[in-house]
Every structure is written in C-alpha cells, then in structure tokens.
Length: 125
Image 1 (cartoon, rainbow, N blue to C red):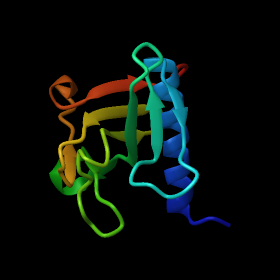
Image 2: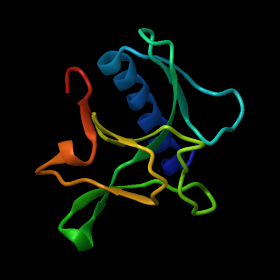
Image 3: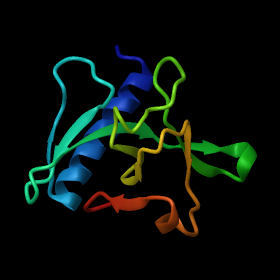
Image 4: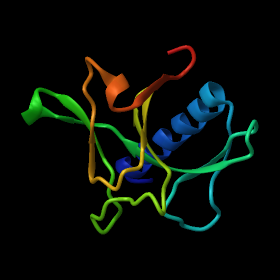
C-alpha cells in the first residue's frame, strides 16, 4: 500500500487538476517523466502553457493555526520562477494559487487571501 503522504499528494494533484479545469477552463496534463512541476496547464484562449507545482497546505499550530504552503523540492530548495510558474496549495476542496516567487514558504492570511493568493473552491464543496 502507498504511504499516506504519497496518497495525500496524489489527491491534492487530482483536486488541483479539477480546479484548474473547472475554474480557469485550462487543459491540464501531467508529465510522463519526473519534472520540477506536477501539472502543465494550457489556457485555451491564449494558447499559453503554465507549469504548476502542487503542494498540500499545512497548518502551523505554533502560529495560531495559520495555513502555509511549503514550496520546496526533495532537496529542501525553493522552486524558482525559471522552473515553475505557479505554486498551488491545496487544502481539502480549496486551493490557493500563488505566482512562483522563489520562496520556500507561502503564507496565507485567511482574513485577506486576495493580497497573497487567488482562492478557488471545488464545485459542490
């Protein structure tokens, strides 16, 4: 059986794919070989492709349960804009889309998510 973190990551990627298709109208695909991004989205209106790295949102109990997206690779390095266009943090049926800015952590201010990320909610949630 797959490890729980692997399952959680796959569920986050599936949720992200659904949101990118239903909320942005993008075509979504996954690379056949390992890449720095998890999903490749294409805007059918412009034809432009976007590389999306999907991460599961974590809650920091030492910071009043604030949500944070840890945007690092397996070596602990931040994803850079040359490799990834967007960081998409998924928490259940909600996702937060950040422009990749080469940061290791993307914090969410729940009172004002508009200032830090674009929030999307899965249909029917």
